[in-house]
Length: 141
Length: 484
Image 1 (cartoon, each protein chain N blue to C red):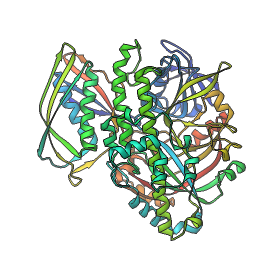
Image 2: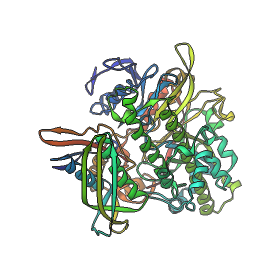
Image 3: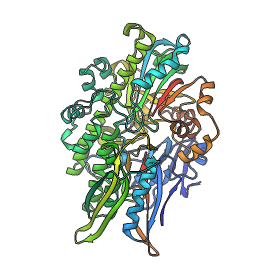
Image 4: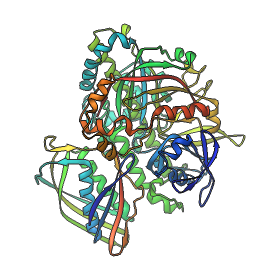
């Protein structure tokens, strides 16, 4: 379970898997962080909570990772760890609540690796194979 | 022959065709050489993406790819597709996240030989004056939302009216640096926020500013009209709409992925999400995309002005002595409504160029009057260690590629492969030995962008030259590079 970066000519591709959808979403967040940042140390300075709703599971995952992108590049806030993640299927689709711990970007300890322009839909398909949820995520850099 | 699992037929030495199969609405056509086809494309997803694009509703003639084609997302990089504006679609994946990523080329009166010992200082000053790298900001004071909306509406005109350049620059920019029918209100507050401190910033990755000199001239007449001479110092700027453009694409992809069901489309890749051009979703995206394109033109205009000032200060010379003037500015990630002849009839189509440059011919009313006798300048940057090219558009491009040509070298190595290959080498020293001064935010960028991570751009340019799509005017050699 977890994630594994794979070769991609121009961008960054990562295969993510989890025993549950929650695990898959959590691993995806950490894969995003590893692609974007080189973090030598962490501090849980502040927390932020986000809520997303979508009829589509892939859109939901992209909404979440895009939020991490926005928080980093526009708000200067680095996500450090996940406190809670609640994901449920509803009558109208999916509902996600996530609480993250993080800190203000500090260029001494948080080195940018790549500028992730966006989290793409390319080849993204969340599937359950032999009791494991899997997806591929391509980050445009 | 079969390449990457796809049957492909030779049309001629520079053109190959993927016959229609499955849900393809048109055949695919790839401008390339046998060498590149059997080499770099052999284990690439790019050809599959040419096939996928051929599924777009309303696509006309062919799903096209230029010789710098490589694996993108949705569309291949180097992809061109025109869709009928009445029954066709617009796809943000056919433009990309970096809306109006493009290249600007400026000339000077300087001769390389006379300033070659000042290149180091020029690079240092350019690097200090132009914000580069991830999260770069502060080229000009942070703008508020109202000011950003003016940029989204007015494009490069905003820069000129705020003291960053002259009216002359506007005349030599594709679309005069401003797409009409841009609607700032179609751009989300989040996208505007991302743009507030990014006007005039270069960014990271493959974006760069280069000091080049003209090494070789192939077309004396066109070179003279573009104001080029051998040994001359010119400046190339490659960047786009930064975070604002990425956010616009992101916002609308989410909308259009959901619209797929509404319009009953069955697409082979979610990244090809699209909507009918005339639908509310399609029109909203077009209005927002044009606004982001205007932000990019303003960005390149501001950067060029900052570069002009760096040159003047470093060399202690006046504007009149420096003659730092724009040659042309082209976008290579865009969708535009254009008229093209299809089956003997002039039709309005939406031309998606994703990593492809417009290449309009001599006589086109859409190019600056001073260039109409030779055609539109096509700017084709290579990698930082070898060379770049200037070409011109042709009538054949109008007939075959919806007036489009290649946009660069195209990557052949992943960043990971490039980093592995760079291990134990001193790339800065290697470039210095070749007479190229480089300054970047970090060594990692230099390693990832090392020359051999890219195809040899001359192979790409030769295909288009021999295919008669864009013909060579001049070859540029890098002397100084700044990167993020």
